[in-house]
Length: 141
Image 1 (cartoon, rainbow, N blue to C red):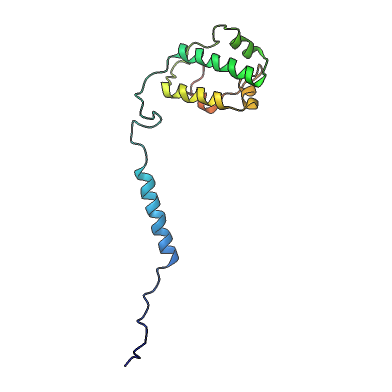
Image 2: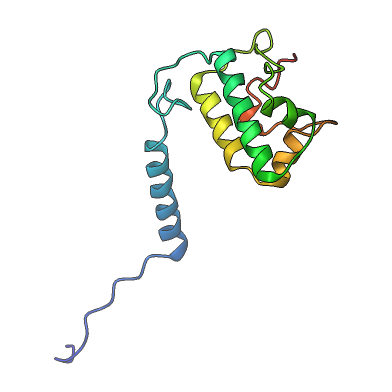
């Protein structure tokens, strides 16, 4: 017979590894269920619409002028942008067809870039291109 105050046997606690594996599996399932569906990637719910090159490059020129003034950058690209000259580019390379959302992301990246980064973007010698504005990396102009 057992003592009247005896405790019932404890159930064994789950192993930490098993609990961790279950938790990671649950997190994986949740993350996969939040993934975008085909057709929604990158569009943020906007209809897919081809980016108008002329409008984009005019907008970029305005951003270039604004940021050059703000950052105190004085080079050929800035001078051309602020003097209202026709943008140097008016078309995307052949085979490159960015969408409107791509242009919006690019312009937003330019507006929020640091002055040192912007200086590199508009440099007279070997300018860089922000990744958000590299619409068709495999296509050469």
